Image 1 (tube, rainbow, N blue to C red):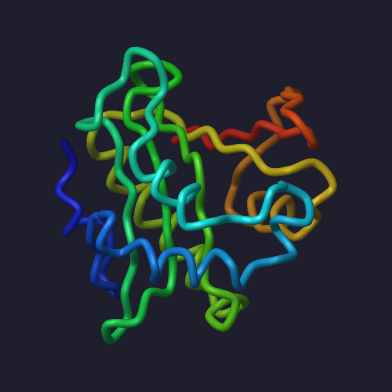
Image 2 (tube, rainbow, N blue to C red):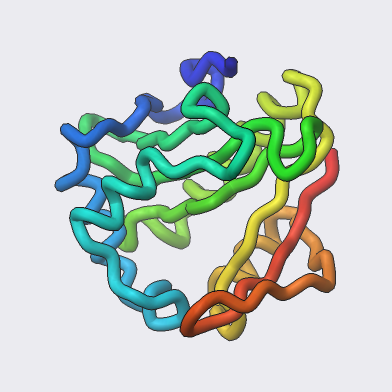
Length: 167
């Protein structure tokens, strides 16, 4: 298991629990542009489900559903799984910076620090997906050294484009 206190030098990082659902929902609902490419819009129930869902053969111990806080204000959420899809990988299932905190380098800093910690822990790669057509997400990932795996996964209502970052 990772020590979440090592994940950021600038923010307080904490595991989000059902007690935090209203703050998490407020953050994700503020990003309506993202959900125009990746429907449906988030609900309290969908956020609660995201907090606990893990892929087959993974456990809650492998999952990190985290909030990044600045002065007690939630500025970002990241959900990642260690050891998935392969043992030397991490999968980011969800990553979002609050709209009023975007375009300040916060997301890039979070991914840089996460990459460093995962690499130090012996992992070799991060995979992530973005909804096809969402150029904001695509450009953000490209800027942060992710490259296309030339794989797309259709899901009901949209298609996800898979990218990776190798350490």
